[in-house]
Length: 146
Ligand code: HEC
Image (cartoon, rainbow, N blue to C red; front, top):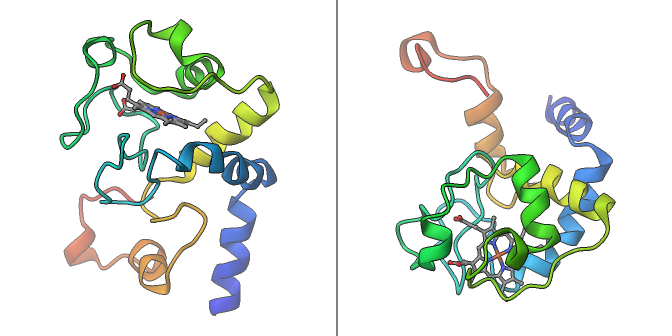
């Protein structure tokens, strides 16, 4: 049973997301990837894909980023990680950018895995059973099934 779940989880994770996790080491100096973790010197990136820019309540963003109107789609994350200063002038992310398009694509694939699972690639048994156990109709009715 446990082995079955692990095999399924492994299948769902493309190899490129694993490289993306390695690329993320360059971001982890400043950013947390863990659900519910407070902002370090930078906003938490858990669940960043699909999020509106400048909206983490515990981080004081630059006006440039806060008023940018950007939504962090994969395409925008690619652009941002290539050259943040070029995409939003006046932002405060002190990072030159990643020149390799492959590394950026892998990184974005990794960021997309940061949803319900703290740490992205690591899933505790409790999180797996919360997510993947057969839905209890009374409780999960109307809820999103990931
Ligand atoms: C030197 C520290 C530092 C590094 C390294 C860094 N960032 Fe940032 N990042 C920041 C800061 C500071 C901000 C907020 C910028 C602002 O308010 O203008 C930010 C903002 C962001 C945002 C916008 C978040 C939001 O809530 O709108 C994203 C996305 C992001 N960074 C992704 C990355 C990724 C991916 C990497 C690795 C490739 C990375 N950052 C590397 C400091 C850093």
